[in-house]
Length: 532
Image 1 (cartoon, one colour):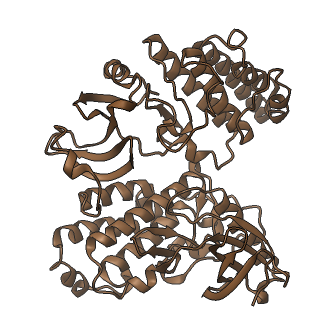
Image 2 (cartoon, one colour; image 1 turned 120 degrees about the vertical axis):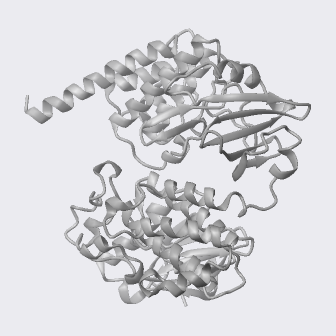
Image 3 (tube, helix red, strand yellow; image 1 turned 45 degrees about the vertical axis):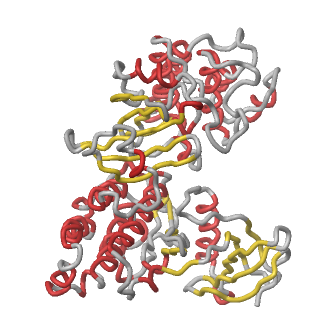
């Protein structure tokens, strides 16, 4: 048994090829935790040590409700590395598979949650490399968790299907990592051939086993015939999706986990959801009756946000409902934005209002938020592209007399990898669970100038990983930005100046400055390439 200061280890609850997992109590907070400890027999293997260390580093950077966070790490008194996670009373999907009492809708719910976690990991450049039932936990409320990133690695998303992992400088890159029955064909060639499309293959195998009871290589026509008697329409719709995922040629698979998730939502038609307010409120709020609820994106005391299907136009929509006492300027701004089509402003298709709530219908942006991407390191070019797009969208909004008033990374959404759109104009700041004005200058009302400051605060965070501190002279913030190019550093410091009169006057001027900075950066890259 291990001895770890600050923790009382109670019992062994899991064991794998690399590590053991113990149930323990964190003494300082008197709460149960799970502690993963590297197996003593592997402690002298430098590659295994590296993988174990990498798992804690990777997961610590990920923050998603379907990924269990890491809260501590260290070395035990037996000189074995460990890391600590909140304890979730759960079972692995492996133990769920043989059960006959799990409905198809519950299985779809697990798969939709798994896609949400894996899609998030992929958007942050992390490929799991070992998707299988044993690495999916399900708690007693039906909440699913993706775990065991022990052989995970980074990938470069813009290199295409044959793209190599970022570990290509590792002499041991051709090690084969994964679990045989779930590995993509290219994964057998080594880690340098493994990318997000390999995870999609493994996900397809897992989906097949969960839905049809066996992995694809053990299936026959009788396997599928037996399933068609139960919920046959949904099962029949799942089969071609699964077959696409397990194509031997990576280029024939779905291009992203988000695409798979959207297809699962369409197949489920909301049947996987329980206990949400849509059913009771949609008729009362005059939502078109043919709009089908697909997913609940958010519900809190101030309102709710839903993903729905508009069958007339064959598109997904986001329906946002906000209580009337927490609206700010959102209604009048949304009315103006229905007439605005800008490449970096989320489209508003329509609005409505009744004695209970304000309702807006906007386009669905599947690429996640900028908040999610703050966990990864972005290149200078990516940061400058984000800066340009934010400046352009704010400049357009300001020209219509629209002040955002709550600009922060969670309101910056992506239509695709490098194409962002601003949303939620005019809603009050800190709608729920947050009382700190992180992205607004203290004691300054909502204004175009305050929006410009928020833009600078976001860019400061992209470059440093932290938010700017109240710094009248700018020295502390300048030190934190020391790794940014001098021109970019001066520009951001001017944008976040606490004195509005010394701040860059408009988003348009800031955009012009960032355009010039990006042009200079491209010139420098070109000069290096041609050896000037």
